[in-house]
Image (tube, rainbow, N blue to C red; front, top):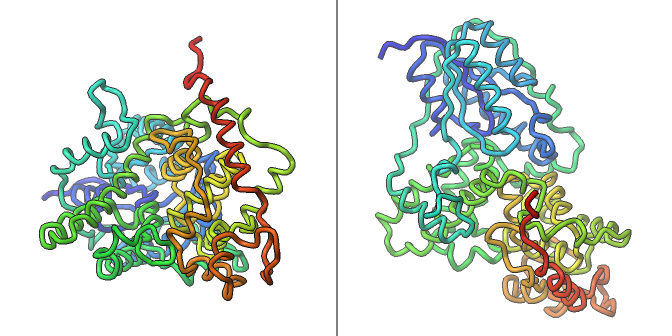
Length: 483
């Protein structure tokens, strides 16, 4: 093929060389390819990346830069404004093409549309690709031509389309870039991390980057896939993929995972239930992005208008309870174990995420946004679509949400999913010699020798209060009055 022109490849949350459609097309079509990453967190406000995400980003950018170097090129790292940096680089290198993989958050959709218009007016051929989802959110509608609101119907329709999915693209091994170096900001100048910060201990648990993603995927396939359906709800077991941060930063793609699962199904029909269950988890990720794309206001508002600020607890007592929840000092063992796992590792098992979210929104009556913001700052897999869907699902105010009257009982959840207390003991060492009653219920009314706080709320009393709030909420209109 006769390659012509100079392409800029604009990296964002697609920090990989394998199955990267924007990079692959640039290398295929153009003689010169210039890779660039532009750090512009303010352009993602009000959800600029949190501290845990920035720690991961620093590591991932370092890994990507090394991969690009091995492919014969250099990753330009610079700081925004994004449009200005792209315009400057386009002039400097005489760019004819601009390629990128799409993002679907409300802020980036708006920003990217303006960039595409401006760069096209400058004469560049601008082309974007789907490099982060199995299906385009705009491509799937129900029989009435409107977005799906129930996961099962959405995933049933999506599965019919996924029969046509194409294999993942191979890794780009050679990036044709001229020898003349381009100015680049040192990675440390982005100030994504500090040497003494709380999140540096994450290095014990994670290896950000494309290689780390594939190693984690291979470990899961070998060790956990054959038991996934039975064990995925038990937080003491390492039975989930732990791929959510890698997916968020685009170090591995859902297409790669889905394609592997289909291949496994062809060769190992005996594990079909595990494959179906894991595929459905990919489906929930798709549904989260689909829902946010079609309901962009839900990033900061409840989808169900009945859940206005007026129904949430904003008392001074609730402010202190919120801080106790963040610190893992609620006096409820399974909740505190989850919050301390989050602080130590930047991650929390999904079953426990639902338990801690239910306590905050139902028992304490605190707005789901407070929990979403804390997760946003402390999770290495903080993803706007997944975070929004998860919190609104548990709070009962989102699409396909759990009924508001469903209040997780932490003691019952611990008894069922951590029966031996292995998870609680891992993150609450003060429970190392506790009996089964203490592991499930905490201190209750007596000390019992535990150096552990009393529960900050009466679970039965606050459950009743949550149900009383529901009686008020359900009489309100779900949608705003027409103007």
